Image 1 (cartoon, one colour):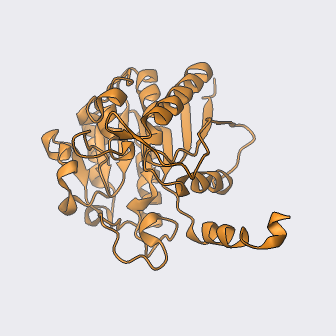
Image 2: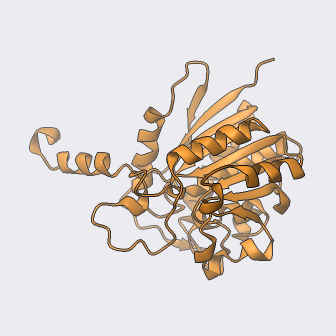
Length: 287
């Protein structure tokens, strides 16, 4: 019987409190390879992009994020897919699908986190859920979101690829406290061996990949936050991998484990967004 794959369009922006993630997800849905065989479901997301998000129990936009998390979870439980592709949105889009998939595969899911940042902050360190999402999945992070996780992911089943380890901030120190495995960009320039070794050592047969596009170098890929035109200083670690290297990594790991989940996050198509904003000011588009 053929595996059932579900696509979720989840233009969630509240986790990073940045409305640009909404349009980035919408455009991403058109960019990814299309398939008439795969069902696409749009998760309802609050589209009042001009609102100011209140801090609720330490989290910006907590109530909206909770509603959207519950909506995504209900869709997954109703559809019961074998594989999930998530098109987002800020990094918090990965919580519901990775939790679901870990349950689907009896708690033996491997998680490959392609990101310049680890997303393991706690509620003491941050107010933004997209900085805590992996922490939530590990049973830490923000307690109210971690409590929603039905299938806690084991620390040994997590691997960071492309992490800028030398620039970890105080909010990122769960990486060291939990002794999470990682490979910095330099280690992945020539081959994927460190990831493949982790897959083999932990007998990982099913893999969910979180692909935060800002793991990429802004010199190689322009539709990411650090590549914003005229931006002077990003204020956080900047990715160093190329799209070609990420493609090689995912091709290599797919030969060792079945990729059952892929979430693509933080797409920032600056040229398209700036053009849209510019055109919105022209009278003919407002008649």
